[in-house]
Picture (cartoon, rainbow, N blue to C red):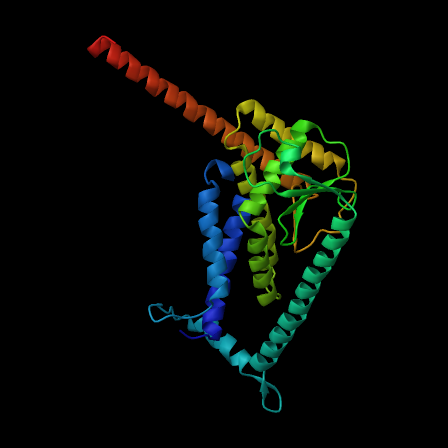
Length: 309
């Protein structure tokens, strides 16, 4: 394994194409009819692993493109001051940027911890079972607070925060089930891994698009997990909950950052995509159910015809 300008260049090119594909899949409403969350999961894993390991391996087959690489190598080796070459200067800027962004990231995590303690001390404390009858899963703590305007999971705490406003029983149930899946999936750790990737490639513009799309994907996955056991009517009510929360967001939340998970991002286009994805999933489930009913009906007819049952 070795790191070189060539391996970095190839990594960036491959990553750019994969991020572009991911952007298309999670931007256009028709794309989710062809690709579901399993394919998108694989795509995200591939691009993230590739970016974290921008190396050439023994089994790597190098494609020689002298018309592109030779001018780049010449530019990187150009001396700009005394014995300092361009690549050395760029490497210094890259490292300084990483250090600066790491400091900001650590500072953000600390601020989030301090804010959580403040919220915890000035909130009404409940458990999920206080809102959902016959709840059998892990009974996470729920904080009702006026510090947030949208339901969320904050930091590494397995605690659900809900705004101190009126929420119907149905909406509250959907909110808590949604946020519970974020905790079960350990999505906060996924977000931190992506944040480290952004810190590592702070100068590579597409990585910020990757972070936004992964945030959307995490919400889509949780939407799917939450509604998987739901009936058609329950899925419709869940979508209504998403819309209601979007309407009730008065302004961007001050806690929005690297260590939070909001049920609703303040973006109507993202919400529209999520709802369309749910509706398509509901349509697929209905077709599968009809197909299963047809197979069962055919099996019964077959048995009645041949075995007289």
